[in-house]
Image (cartoon, rainbow, N blue to C red; front, top):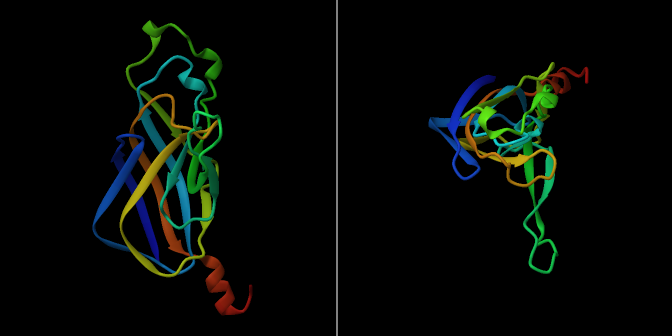
Length: 172
């Protein structure tokens, strides 16, 4: 089984949610391949040096321990685990970034298409989902992005894991 997605979502308050008309079935021990992602945002100075991590509520195993804001005493309030779908690095032309606000575009696009798809092996039971949630954090400090993200477009595939087929054939 193979489900290909290209999802487009409007981002509000650093979150995006995509609803499906009918529930989507994720097979047991599925595999997710992320092909590319594009985010659009309102840039500020040094926007070319910013990278973004895209988190999701899909049952993937790549986690970060994002720490919440510090209290007035400087002590962290604890953390939570967020599964990382894709990390988008800063743009390669970051040296060309100008600090002059007059030269900043009104909307910037940051697209990342890795040479090979980012692969996530899941250890899940078969499940049905009605929506997918996405969150965004700065790549460097795992806080909210400096530049507010307005839109996300992501292309990925959920499919039956090839390792299960090999186990059943006895060649694993």
